Image (tube, rainbow, N blue to C red; front, side, top):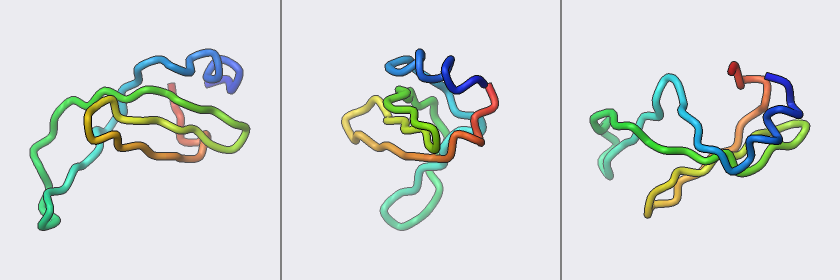
Length: 68
């Protein structure tokens, strides 16, 4: 995806494929569920997304892994 197009989508909801794996307090994988993510920041080197829940998880990754 073009970086400029991605920057225009800041604030949009996105879906991750494959879905994120969540672990319980003992480190066991929890059943998969749909998680809503919001694109919160895009720079020349990285993309930041935040989970839209009460837990407020977020992550930053290199923009080169964005497919579409």
